Length: 193
Image 1 (cartoon, rainbow, N blue to C red):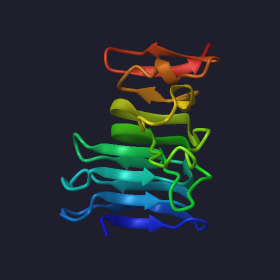
Image 2 (image 1 turned 45 degrees about the vertical axis):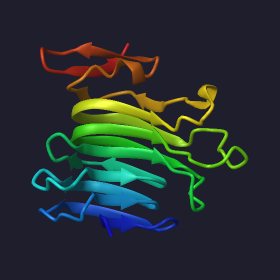
Image 3 (image 1 turned 180 degrees about the vertical axis):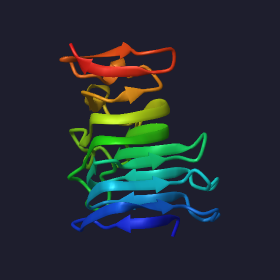
Image 4 (image 1 turned 135 degrees about the horizontal axis):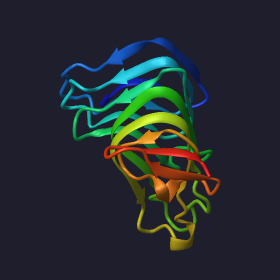
C-alpha cells in the first residue's frame, strides 16, 4: 500500500498525545489517509524527513477534527493537508475537516472535488468542507482542484476561515464576518471585522 496509517469508512479513531513520524520509505505516498471519522488531540503527523511522502495527510471521506496542539508537517515542497470529496466506491457522504489547533500546518494545502463519474453518476453538490477556526498555517499556497467535467456552477469551494495565522493571504476563503489582516511582513492573521 502507498498509505501509512489508514482509517476505513464508518470507523472512528482518536489519536492523542503523540507524533507519527514518517521515515524515508520509497513506497509511502500518503503518510495518513482516512475515510472514517478521526480526531487529533495534541497529535502530530510529521513527514518533514520523508522525501517520498507526497502528502502528509489526505482525507477522502468522513471527518477530521484537529484539536488541542495538533500539527501536520509536510516534507518541504510537498503537500501537508489534502482535503478531498472523492465520490467513488460509495464515498458519497463527503468530507468535513475542522481545524481548531494551536499547532502548525505546513507545505501546500490542497482542496479537491475529484469526480470522474459519468454524467448520470456525477454528484450534484460539492461535499468537501474545510472549516478553519485556528491554526498556524505556514503554507506555501491553497490549491483548489475540480475535475474538468464538473459543471462550472457546481464548482463551489467550501472553505471557511474564521481564525488562524497564515504565511499567504487567505482572503479568498475568509468568512464574510472576518478579515485577513497583515500582521507583519511574513504573516496574515484572521480576526473578526
